[in-house]
Image (cartoon, rainbow, N blue to C red; front, side, top):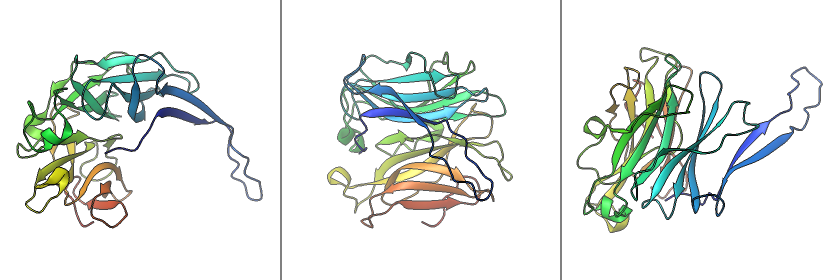
Length: 278
């Protein structure tokens, strides 16, 4: 389902840009730092990167540490940089649940409290995606949440949030991939929003031989992460997504599309989470 990302790279632009008229724009001095690379390190593969900057200015880079594909034995890692990405700490393991899948890291920084929330997806490592979609798996795929109050050095024990964020009729479930946002405008200012996606029953769907379709949704919190809710489903034929907020408070979901139009799918919301036209 995901593009083949073998190397996770942090890119830092070091040169200033000149804004005055008539000046020639200098070529940026680009410094590349390889944070994780396939075949090097404790794990076989590193996928699904995510990057946020904390309220204190620390850069946090997350990824999945994989032994196989989208399911199986997957751990969640983070590296920290306190100098804008020039140098990085050793990797820290946020969650290693034996042979199970701890994946799809989707962090968001609460600028009001400073707390860093990490929303992720878990499943039994023996279950593959097809079985989860067809609901023949040992366990469903479940969203979890954890947080850090010390700039990513330590993390709380992940807790299930599926009771309020997952429809029991869904099969597949995945947070992100990417990052969450905190709303800056309108009546829902301060709301935390996390992009997510799922599979759902569809008599005409062809996902994994059907009858299933892919849809997207968001998770949101109005109490600084104490509780989470889910939006309406955005469908048909879209899943992996990223959400952003426009200056008028409109939310835009940019999603992977399965509608045969060779383009991305777009959905908008005027009320902070409810999807609109694509």
